[in-house]
Length: 205
Image (cartoon, rainbow, N blue to C red; front, top):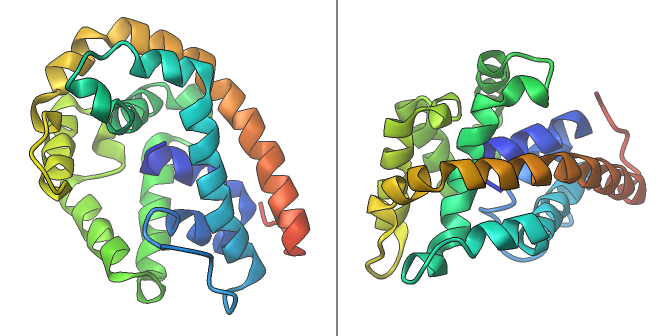
């Protein structure tokens, strides 16, 4: 899943848990044992959500709608597109307005910027510069995100120009997302509670 989905799924675990989840794509190896237990649990949560997502039948089916050479990058494309769908359908999954949630999330990351790796710090700046994560709902921003992702890869890829292919599959990807995301919410709830229980951390709502 992409950044906004991870933020939503981790939000009710408390500040340290949410920070750990935000670190999930930017911290390599085991969580730092010096961190608070809830932050360590958040890193593990992020990675567990990624594993669940990658193996989910609806996500596998969505990836398989792409033909080579895009199929190789279908997981990246779906991460971005599913955040696009999440912004558009936000009210189905969260009572807090999406603009308020995104502003609160960015303010939280800004307040903890001194505690994150430089790569995440640069990404926070990039989100500010592009109006993310709220702007994931806009197609032009999705195009900019795909260009940015393509520039980070070590070899040339078709990701930068993939927006028309995502739009062409909009109906089927919407159906896959609608079937997948409620199941992800339930799985994430159980996983979050289990990891926080194992860490001995107090869950904050």
